[in-house]
Image 1 (cartoon, rainbow, N blue to C red):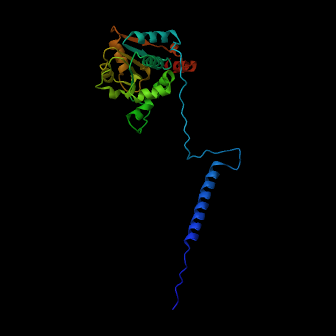
Image 2: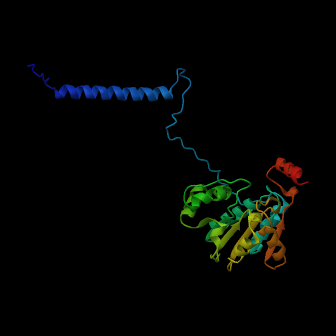
Length: 269
């Protein structure tokens, strides 16, 4: 009858072997990562795709007061300062949004107002962006990025982040304005108003309370909705009221660039 052979196990030897294997495996992994990062040519280094490469950009803060670039902007700025409700209509690149955002930032910084409300209809320009992840603020952020840049430039990114966090600056879709009241010491900007329906515009306008500054901007010629738009309808209905001003920019007032002016001439001549 054959005897069974039982090899006596050495726990220290197994531990040593496991350690050696682990060390070897670790070296292999590290060596593998090194091969991914450094090519044979020592002058070329590849970025590790698994690394956390994060970049951010914020426009430098402008410390000087807002200065109009042409007489049309000066009239528009004067109208915003004088009237409770100002409509700024006209082609892209005339500074409608920038002037309104800069004036709102200056009013908040000086303490003349307590809150800025930014809103616009959540309508894409000719294409469906699909489902956007995150909370409402995250979903709407893509629509309000242009104003975020303006406020960062006039107030500084840190101040804007703080004001957003503590409700001093509120950015919300137009649909979320129903039931709200724009109370005193509030500066409200409705941008891209050509994409509102007449019913939406009426809803927005009836939110206005006492001592509230409201600016409504848009370009009637660039509506992305079918049928009548609320901006054209409102300016026709309200243009003659005493405390409302309608300022209309023309193509000659474009300040973004001479190329934009020529492009718009080609499309709208």
